[in-house]
Figure 1 (tube, rainbow over the protein chains, first blue to last red):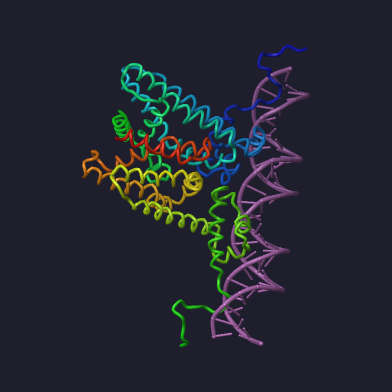
Figure 2 (figure 1 turned 45 degrees about the vertical axis):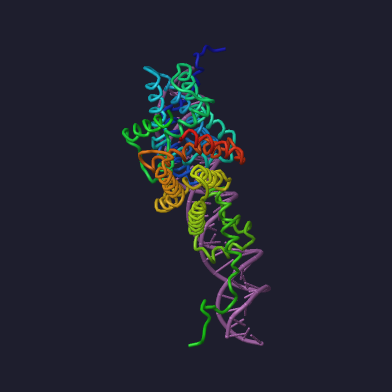
Length: 206
Length: 206
DNA sequence: ATCATACTGTACGGTAGCGTTCAAAATAAA
DNA sequence: TTTATTTTGAACGCTACCGTACAGTATGAT
């Protein structure tokens, strides 16, 4: 048997790794803009600066590509909410930090588009829907509930059920803004807008 | 000039009015289930018990049909929220009645499906999006704000801004349930569930 | 009875888009 | 340099579906 490198380097021209990310990025935004059906493989290929055949080389299917894109987003959401763990200062500061991170993420135009497109397109894929919910809204809820629980331990607040409390607070933070963004009645939230919503939400909650 | 009835009765076989509603109903549910692109005219025709040609006789286009369906829904939403005006009893009872009507409507499976499909499909039709928002969420907000204003006049509650207060209360009432329904993590809300959400929301709000 | 229109079923043309094939060029390892 | 593999562009078959045409039948007004 011939000696081989650890990462079995096959002979022949190697794949260009940059094309993978180009395809994923292009596919994500094309799907976000047009939805699954209206988005065409040729559009995605053109936007990625790649040949259509290259896409079919790496993904068996349009649907497989779509699922890969969603899976990637699911993982990135999980990471994004994780990063809120960097919490310092007193409890109110922690709460505000968490809320600020959450709203900034939720109100970003990419996420708004995702939230507009995804539910419709994966209605027939219950597994993906569950996984996405768990990684996204579900995880946020769990994390916020844990944070609030710590607040209760200190005596800052009181409530019956941490999960319910987390839902209430998230709902207050979001308010109507998510609906307005989803329907395009509003086109973005400034930093000031976010801070206003945060303050109001927290105040009403306490 | 020949005498004529008030409603100019044209000669020839008259249109069967029942077919119009059959088409609209079938189209609504097919669009809700499949989305605009995946829904086919033949499916809609079959479901309505009607020939494909009959549909093209009355609607120039697939898109025209879609817009007619959405327009009808927009009008029905406006009416539905109006009917909450039948308010009796003390203020808390009125608030609960309003909230109950609202949540029952929002959590109905048809409305959940509409809220899943519509934002994606009309993202490129800003006019329709605005009209739908105004007739739906916007109108609910306005009505609830008016109701809360009356509550303030009585001295039941106090707040700076009635619109903001209405948003807060609606957000608390909905909580996470709308998200769960939209992603199919939950499949319906019982009357008891609705009452629980209502009580909690109102309590936290006060 | 006649006429005008509605409705149906089938068939059709046209188009868009998926996924494949093929030959040629590019790229790196052996 | 040879060899294995990727990438590309163009062409292709295939299917699905839109919207139309047509011929025949149903239905009601005159």
